[in-house]
Amino acid sequence: MKNWINAICGAVVVLSTLPGDSKAADVKVLSPVSMRGVMTEIASQFEKTLGHKLVVDFATAGAVASRVQAGEAADVAITSDAQIEAQVTKGRLAGATRSGVARVGVGLFVKQGASKPVIDSVAAFKQTMLSAKAIGYGDPAAGGVSGVHMSRVVGRLGLDELQSRIKLFPDSQAVMSAVARGDVDIGFGLTSDAILVPGVELAAPLPADLQNFTDYSAAVVTGASQEVAAREFVTFLSSPAAQSIWKSKGFETRTIQ
Image (cartoon, rainbow, N blue to C red):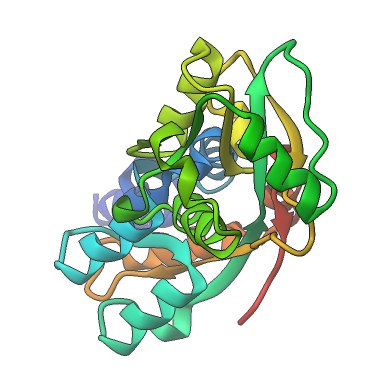
């Protein structure tokens, strides 16, 4: 009888150490809306590989940083390098867990099938802007990186006369939807944004003299309820499997420690 009880107890110990649902965690991730198209595939691969489930909440990069700063309960935050650094300094993110994951530039989008303007120089870009009847990009007040950058470009090129033709939207997905509907002739977003909605095409990235790359990093939120699983996810974002997905969705991969 004693041997039988010992055998059962031993089996319970062994089973409790095996991976499975009992060890799976729901990892809450705050992610930029620009990653909506890529995160579904990354989440699926991560869940298959490590057994955890991702619960992803999308917002502009600026809003992600603001929510972290406000102390919202989450496990991982992904946003721009500068915003990650600011939240590490404030103690909201664990600096030791920080890892670079991807970078992306800004591009001009048109409705699928429409002619694609040539913007391979500053002069060509300026002429395209002056010729457009309606121009769309993210509201810089919302914190989206492409909207903030485009607002600066318009100011830098002295295109204030276009203000009446510029339509601002809450995020990149709204910009792409407006392009697809024909509400604007041209829209601006990150070069990865074409996958957010059907019916849009990337005409071209901004010319080199006007381009702006956003470098994204990820870090574990200080006090994360699923810290171990969160660390595993941050590491996974730079894995070969994840890098293949990033590249297929219009991002460039990068790794910093």
